[in-house]
Image 1: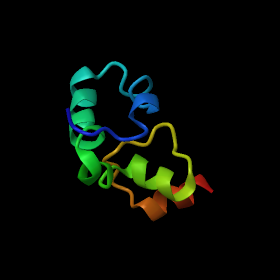
Image 2: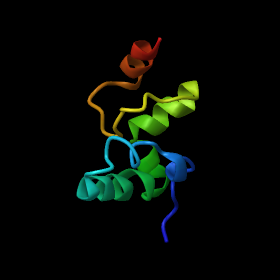
Image 3: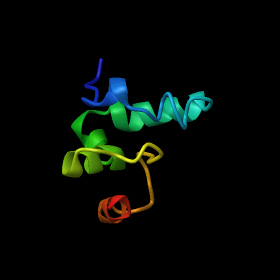
Length: 75
């Protein structure tokens, strides 16, 4: 089994905005959550959480916004 992101079990996108999108959710899990450190480091949710300790509930791992733009929009 591959390494999982430390936030995987409690990531709200799987019980929230992706709850009715099983295929999309499975793809995100494979590409970001279960891809080891190289996957986590490309996940915008992971990057923002590491920088500021919290994440917007609706932020997707592949957001087109930069980490800086996301953080600025949270302030």
